[in-house]
Amino acid sequence: MNFGSIISWILCGLIVGLISRFLVPGRQSMSIPMTILLGIGGALLGGFLYSQFRGVSVDPFSLARHNWYGWIVSIMGGMLVVWIYPFVFPRKWWQ
Image (tube, rainbow, N blue to C red; front, side, top):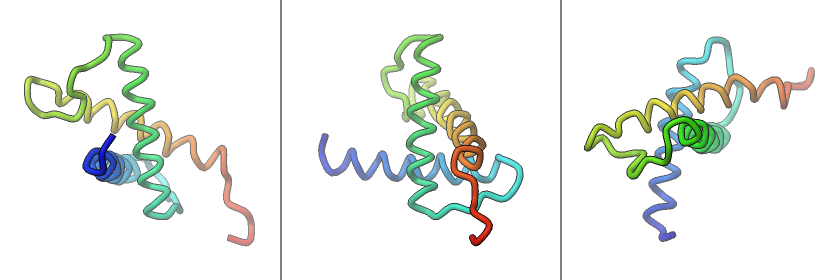
């Protein structure tokens, strides 16, 4: 894994996390780094669940060769993670 692939995972996580936060109703009080982490986690969760049903994709984040579904699955996984996050880590009364 090189530096470029790490940066691409962070950027994909940011994009997936922001879209997921936008699509999940209600207010999510989390920072940009937490959005990136939840986006990366959602992408991994969505990719894992999709691979259980359809098999592993060759290029999950490519828009070529009809692999756009990798982004859709990642966003759906991100939505699930963003929706679950407040239940696992609720805000304290002083926050």
